[in-house]
Image (tube, rainbow, N blue to C red):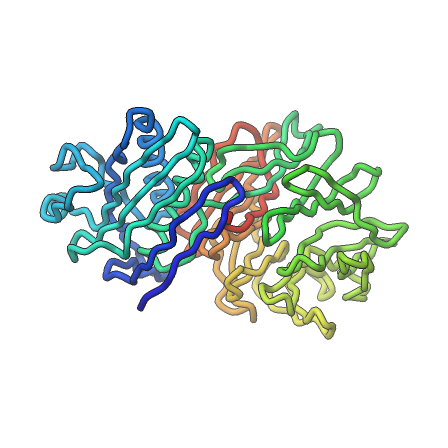
Length: 440
């Protein structure tokens, strides 16, 4: 089966030559059983000119690190290579790679110009079948976009071998925290999926919570105490310009999320000790009430098709998860396990809902089918909360906080099978992650 791969025009000036590729025999079968990581080799990429040497080394290492981070790949170290020098143009010596049990090989060449342009050509090989996976590809851009270039290469390797969508070249908005636990300063920040390139979007003058990035990655909704009580703000990622959204008077607005088409938002509005879910049209700025009950309804999230929402409510006497059509109707309870459920969020694939669960004095991150069946916990600790999905629906990121007076939050990710629990390395405490789309 043939498929055409397009990246499109990228905002950073990176371009791609589209290439026709085919589904090769090298595949990872991903199930809930035990997965033996696929062994791969990434020799240091060839530098076509002296100025490209350091960049070629950096890109090759980022590609390898990205693949390893997925938990689906295991790298063969360079000291096991039989060939001492691997050039991009030479034919692959398959027996040499089979001898060290490599299943996949990635080769590339890198060239720079004195005008700051960067070109990367790369190929992916199935070693045991002795074939190249699809045609070679070429990326071009600025020498200031080295990490993005590497993430794009890794995304293509990941996609061709696993058959799943990419996620390495994506951004995450989160709350960066500083100061003592009882006087924590918080501000919005954005970073690459791996925790690199952190940039701040707001100052730390006001308490900010629960940022939610749009499906195109260009805007962020968040809750701020700037006015003295919770209100919803809309921020432009590119300019950092922001505005307060006009929610009903005499109450507190919080927990906003975009619809998939970014034309509407859902949010919670509290008044007189009771909170309900509201729907706002971003063009007219008009809000309509979606729920009406003497309970706390909050943390709404759209389904990928925009037709339903999922939210948490204590209308049954304890905190549980409900779904309902955006057009209106009676909410349908879907959580029935032991414990309390909160912060539900629909997978971009549409098949699962992630949530936070409190049970037996611990908090964990779990997933269930959209009808509440097949519930599974993926993590548990003193406090795990606030799941967010990778763009391909394969990985969940969340915040984990440690106990005690010096306890602080940090960000973790986990595969939807419950394997490959990993902590991100950040310089400061972090919470409330929101995973954006793959960049174009």
